[in-house]
Length: 151
Image: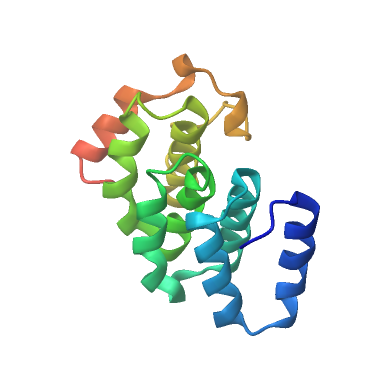
């Protein structure tokens, strides 16, 4: 938490593989929330999102709160979907429709929901949300899907 050297921070993160899962998860959450290096905060959020499953539903509050922070937000979308499954849709729909968020993060929310639900509104779009344009976001299809109760 105290280093401002990115290489050192990544080296220390690699050492987390040697500690227990709960300790690792706790350190990753703390760094993603308030670490001094923004790019490392993003990376720790990605590591955390990769580690979680539906058995970690207690982390949903962390991921939901992280949606408001542009550094961990992208990977927190994946994390919230992994811990809540379809229960994440009411949280992610408003996020995906809010133009105050970057297109990349909104597209990530759309893509994650489409993958989980089997919906086709992301078909034909790049698998990497970073390549989506504002006009690619299927806003009306998402609204219709939400209004229908996420069938």
